[in-house]
Amino acid sequence: MAFKAVIYDCDGVIFDSIEANFAFYRQIMTAMGRQLDRQDEQTMRVLHTYANRDVLTFFFPQGEERQRAFQLAAAIDYRELLPLMRMEPGFVETLEALQPRFQLAVCTNRAVSMEALLQEFDLARFFGCVMTSSKVTNPKPHPEPLHRILDHYQIAPHEALFVGDSDLDRQAAEAAGVPFVAYKADLPGFARIDHHAELLPLLRRRETS
Image (tube, rainbow, N blue to C red; front, side):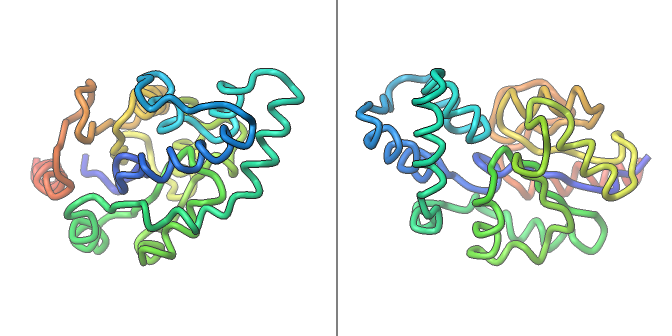
């Protein structure tokens, strides 16, 4: 059966956003009198893939510290960090090829910054559904965000593809029953791609099979 929708994660898939994310959390850590260790792989993985509230809970498990960190995060204007974002090569061209035939969506653990990001890079026009961590009770790796997108488009899980780059994305896709495409990542799934344009022949093969 042909696919009807393509769903994208944001960080690491639509954008190389590690510099912006690092700068965001470094501001919070500095204000809290802490250092952010760029060489710590677990730290970098968490701040790049988890929802904001989960990242801050990871760094500040205690109640009072955590609430202070939440307040600091809410006061940061993420638009000031947008110049640090780098769109992945070939993404817009791929969306332009997909849009006439497929529903397009974003499923991200970003919260309120996602809308501004799409507007800044003129991407909002492509996506009929943008599911962020602020719109769900349970962000990825829980399947709720993907279920909400499937409900929005009234399609079955096997009629969508989810393109992600982290194990959180893979877990969410597996739990939702959505085929997973690993982007620049050695993760199991329906397929692995290193450039967005590689998605097009995958979809064409399904349409003709």
